[in-house]
Length: 370
Image (cartoon, rainbow, N blue to C red):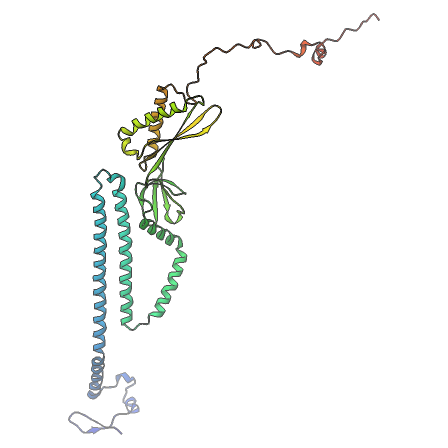
C-alpha cells in the first residue's frame, strides 16, 4: 500500500474511496488535493506547454507572415493597377485637344472602359490573393483542405447553375470591354435595340434610341452587334432623272457640286475621300437612277447624305435638269384634239332592233270593236 508523507509528519496510507464516502465525500471532485498532486499537475501542464509553445509560436508567426505578405501584395497590385488606369486616362487627355482627338479618342469612352477594366482586375487580384492566404492559414492549422475544396466546388457549380444568366452577362461584359467592341458615344445596332451608347457596364449596356428612349440591354442577350462608329462610314445618294437626259452632262453637274462641297467647312473634315459617281443602278422606261457614294467620318453619314442631296438638287435645277417627281415637263407642241371627245357614247335605245328598245316600246291598245 502506498503511503504519503504529510508536511512535518509521518507517512500515512492514502484514503480509499469507501473511507472518503463514509466521511461524507459524496462528490469525487470535492476530494481534497494534496500538494504533491497539485505540483504534479502543474509540472505536467508546464511540460505540455513547454513541449507545444514552439509549435504555437511557429504557427502564429506563420499566420502573421502570411497576412502581412498577402495585404502588402494586395496593396502593391492595386496601386500598380490604379497607376496603369491613370496613365491610360492621361494618354487619352493628351490627344483630346488635338485635331484628331475627336476622331480617334473619345475621352468619356476611354475613361469608362479603363475604370471598368481596373475594377475587374482589382477585384480578381484581391480575390486570388486573399483566397490563397486564407487557404494557407487553414493549412497552417493542420486542417485537411480536401473536403473544403470539394464542398466549394460543389457550391460553385450549384451557384453557377442558379445564376447562369448573371454569370453570362458578367462574362460577356468583361470580354466586351477587354476587346473594345463598343464604347460611350458609339452608334450601335445590338439586334434587340439600336442607338447611341451612353453607358457601358459589366452587366447592362445603356442605349439611347433615335426617339430619345433609353434601352437597358443585358450583355448576355447581345448575340451580334454592329458598331456604326468605328473606322469609317459610307454615304450613298441615289439621283433619279428622266431617261432622256444626257448622262455626261448630269455627271459633270454632280461632280461640280460635290467638289464644291468638299472644299467647304465642315464638310472638308467629314468627307474622308472624293465623292464618286458609281454609275447607273437602275434604268426604267420613265426614269434612270445614278448612285453617288462618299466615304465619311464615323457617325456623320446622315448629315453628309442630306447635304449631298441638297447641293445636287440645286445644281440640277440650275442646269435645267429635272429629276423624276419634280416639275412636270412642258409640252413643246399642242397635242391634236380628239374629234370624238365631245361625242357621247352610243345608246342601246338608238337601235329599234335592240332588246332594250323592244322592252321600252309601249304595247298596242286592243281593238274593242272587234
